[in-house]
Image (tube, rainbow, N blue to C red):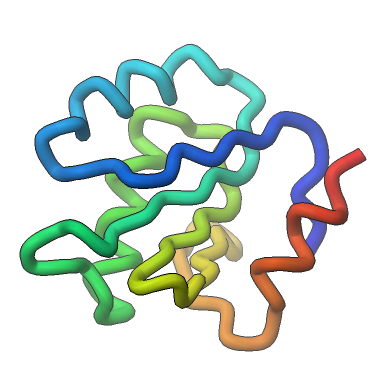
Length: 102
């Protein structure tokens, strides 16, 4: 999976900052991948269903997103948009994605 072009990491987002984060997302019309630290969320969205739902929500505000790295307690989980469906990608190494940016 290649996530070239625009890339942003917004680490440490708390649920109360979601509206501000969504406003920022709307400004990045070519953003393809973002990283979101959900470690401080209570409860944290760690199940595949919760991560897919959150990815879908983020995609509403930034339709160019095709990959989202959710970090919980320093453990990254990549969720990718595949044929219109958000899926947890167990095969890709999220740390390697940052090296693929051109």
